[in-house]
Length: 93
Image 1 (cartoon, rainbow, N blue to C red):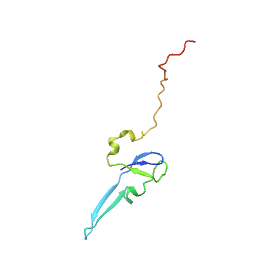
Image 2 (cartoon, rainbow, N blue to C red):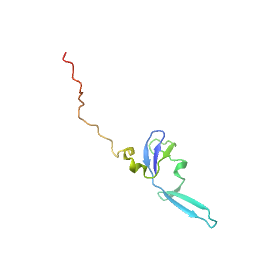
Image 3 (cartoon, rainbow, N blue to C red):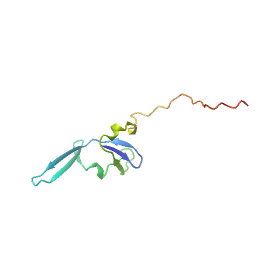
């Protein structure tokens, strides 16, 4: 499930397993698991791993696959060493 922090705008993704069951009376229930441990549903308190902010929003499943520009690169981007040249000619005086 993809998330975005409302504090620092960090985007990250977390994987959950949702187990749905029904009791003998027909009542349905869900159990959310992350890394094999029971956790609350992500809408009730996801913490940003970057800044610790508790205000995060979720995206629909598959959102980041359709918008790869939101996924930060694994390594820092190296600046281009090519000098910038102005298209405006310098004054001759």
